[in-house]
Image 1 (cartoon, rainbow, N blue to C red):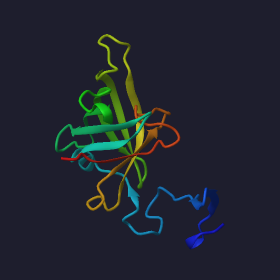
Image 2 (spheres, helix red, strand yellow):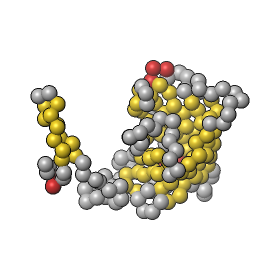
Image 3 (tube, rainbow, N blue to C red):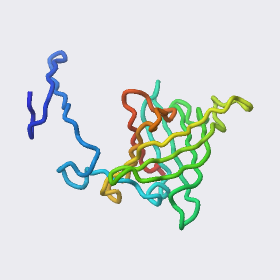
Length: 182
């Protein structure tokens, strides 16, 4: 079945409702002909550090997470200190895990970047002092909209060496972080 603009659609019936699924591959490169508002680009260090990034979604149950990236200095805003924290919504008081360490950013072509995270679990309910180190050490593919000033969010995919952030679950490994609510 073909839908609008020649997109390939798969048809399924659920009860009395007819459902269509769009399986068209939309490139993560450039604006895909749909306008610059949808296009992706590599973030700058200043874009990454101007917000505390928040995520809300599901792991095994509803959860929240924050990613804080602080620049080393105003002249070197492409690396610095990082903190990743996540909670279950049902207990927003005490985090499940807190990771602290360093981050760095390199370009991965014109349309994405690699956010290198080198962090160790330092707190949260799942942390036990003296435990074997649990680390996040990988380069995660990151993108921001070309119209970042209007659509402020950060896309983070799984690590280049197969690592995941604690909240990333297959098959939906792309996480969308938004500026933290005030």
